[in-house]
Image 1 (spheres, rainbow, N blue to C red):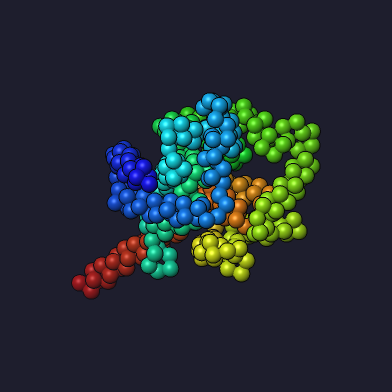
Image 2 (image 1 turned 60 degrees about the vertical axis):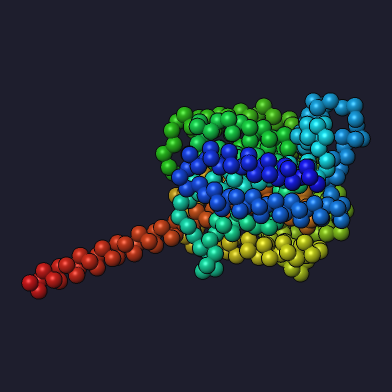
Amino acid sequence: MIGVFFLIILFAGLNQILFGFYYKRHSFFNKKMLNLLYLYHTLFFGVYLWYAYNNPSDSKGYYNFYTKFPGLSWFDTFGTDTSFINFLGYPFHSIGFSYEMVMVTFSWFGFVGFIYSYLFFREKIPIKVKILKNFDLLTLLLFLPNMHFWTASLGKGAPIFMGVMMFAYSILQPKARLFTLILSSFLVFYIRPHVFLFLAVGAVVGYISGKEKISFANKALVVVGMLGGVLLVQDQILAVVDLEGSENLVEDFNSFTDVRSGDLSRKAGSGVDMSSYSLPFKLFTFWFRPLFVDAPNVLGLIISFENLLYLYLFLKLMRKDFYKFIKRSPSFVKMSLVIFLLTSFAMTFVMSNLGIIMRQKQMVMYFIFFVVYYYLAEKKYLSYKKMQIMKLKNMEEKTRNEVQVL
């Protein structure tokens, strides 16, 4: 375990370099909070490690892969989906990292995702929003336990979250952040090709429909780059659902989802038969379950509290003015909503296991949180402006009355 403690300290040092880099570029950057967030995330590495010791965990399979196939070179492991996780982990295993050391390395990848989550939110939403009277919403979102649990181990969860949130931050200024945009797109595509498709479509829709003025160069870069990227890798994306040679995509996709849903349901004792659910209830299951009564275990009960918060935040959008807000919202808000809805819609057709649902949805929940946060921040700003106008009118009226008296 000495190696684990060494790496935790090493990554803490790397964090300071990253923090310094972004502190120079963003005056709002809060090093103290992010250092605290790193300690919090590291705590969840310990929690997940204990969980993996006492329960079946994919992380063991990823680490043992290298001992099963000792003759493989690094580039023999290169590929999409599971193969890319083997590719990412290969250098660490080859230099003698123990299982625990590779776990803490991937946990740090997950933490980097939280750095970019913070940047994504704070760059575009400078207004602080409180919910339940006393809780700062951004702080609450960054410290959600389910998000940290599933991004603190060896597997797809940590690097896909890092890639997705790097993409979200980079796409705000694609020309200036081209390197991180390309790197994040590469990561997301090779880990989950279909998620890259959702990100690309969301970015294109957002940039085309956004109300703010965006330079032609930025629009062209996003639209041509994202659509071109999707066309180049369309076969690999379709291969994820065994549709690369399909002549009837809709029918073959329905067949695939029926089989996939059944397979996932049998993987554990937390399966739910979603085949007979209506689309709204499928989406409800993906977003908000387990919810106490159907929690599969102690972890499910803990997650139920977090899901209750998700439901509370979602209900904040159930207002008459939300549709008008979306119509006039900037590109990055529309992008976030499209990515969230597309991913949710696709996942509901293949997810039928609550354990897998709890793990998979962490990729995209921050996108709907961003929409909620922006919506509430705008309402707060408009309310503040209205109060200021009223105060100004009252002062003008008071001045007129005083003048009349004189």
